[in-house]
Image (cartoon, rainbow, N blue to C red):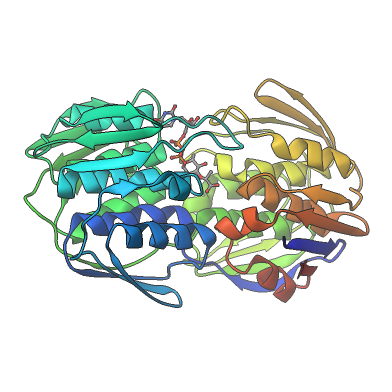
Length: 416
Ligand code: EPZ
């Protein structure tokens, strides 16, 4: 089991290039199932979750070829329609095969993902959306089986904003007969990126990126070539790292428009941030000021940056109130930060963080992807060394993280 060892205290300096977005790549790779033939994707990040996705596509009969950041998927041999439990349990986003398989083959059998560290994360809204399009849904033995003749377009309102729920139902709707209107849809950039790729495959989608998406169903789609957008959460993580270490970093090949809420909060906390077309330059103050944060669906402050921001507020000057409104159990990192000397009190969905002068390095345990990133940030500013266990969580969502941080001057290395 790999661990990551960090000696804190170095301000980060230099420049870092952002990788392709994990949460954009996952639905886009699954969308290849909607057409028969070879599609090619560039800037696909090298992550465990991408490996899981390509593994699942292979079990369905898809030809997978990978050359570094470039992936080619040949779906002409697609023959199976089942996503087995041992693959879905590794990556809950595997449920994104449901919409494409239902639309392309008229049936799909997918293991229910089960809960995860940050919450129950049901998929009831995914299934309600498929039913609205005419699918018959059955749940048995931990699997969901969906079947339909040709799906029919429908009007559907999501009870609450769901990113992969929107993506799943959107992928089913593009081949349905007639018009679909998806209301209270997620507005995340990853939804917009998926819709752009689908339209390039011949779909007819309007309104992606807004709360109301209109789809005119078409008879079929054709393969595509596409480039994955930059990862906004990786971008936010490096912004936070530069700000909290009092460093000066240029972030390249990113999309500043996708991290507006994070930039606002860091500026209010005292970081100086200059935004270019595809770059962001950040200069951290000697000590950040405490600011309050409430996570919200895009374009609000992203829940995937909540843990990282809490690490910053742990050493800020003042008291910060952080409210997590998206997931019911996304404060697992608090106990690990407290072991490093942070002063945090949880009450329901709110954490009150009283900044301390300095955290102290300690052996800590990563629990989920973004909690691991939080512990890396804490380690970068803590006294002495921090040893992070279970870093496979990090490898799910961050490409070459320790290499990127080392290149910025951090004392960080992987130890087995
Ligand atoms: C996506 O997860 C992201 N994952 C998550 O990133 C991110 O935290 C989340 O959106 C919120 O932004 C991918 O895109 C692969 P949701 P998703 O459906 O789609 C409830 C990371 O670290 N809900 O928007 O699974 C759900 O329980 C990951 O990269 C239902 O009740 O999240 C949650 O409380 C972590 N029923 C809320 O909605 C449903 O059918 C938002 O979940 C679906 C969701």
